[in-house]
Image (tube, rainbow, N blue to C red; front, top):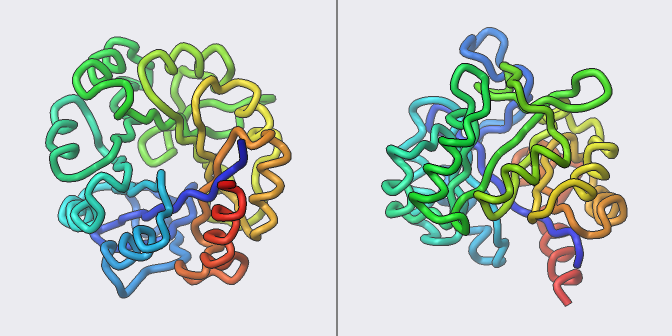
Length: 257
């Protein structure tokens, strides 16, 4: 088992962007953007498809992204996971649009309180094997607390072994953004990666702070190959200078043997 690079696409106002996670609020004044693409999402999807970069995700950050998301899914039917405002009412629609799996997050926390009933409902509706739960988090005290609503609101769920095992009965994998370092290219949260490897009974993808290709090797060592990684702002296709996509492709090929 080895850590793999997983690709991503973040959509904001219908465009492919890289945003500093902690600034993603309803106020455009506070928003800090690292990258805005002149290409539509399908161009990135075609690149991922060409190089068989599996397990990637498209995230809709707010309203105005449905058309772009549909175009991305149509560019590679069954090749990408989709997240952003997913719930039991629209889940079937997005699977029909071409999503491989659906990523659910804020809808599971009405009034910031985790609802096992909602999780069971959507899991039963689409099947555990097609559901990914996003438990992205912020540092609180000595641990982490799951954050929703563009990572601005803390919930009642502490991210730990107990909570991951409780949720794991209803989904097939986890997506965890370290929101405090997301988009900052300041280095990964090494302690969180170690704990995810120890806690998670399911495949888990970590995001946040990646800044160099060596971070793949670092996560591989810290997690004994149990945690995958996605890179955003540091990646050359998103205007970054720290990581080249071609090196991520090479890593995946060399570690698939």
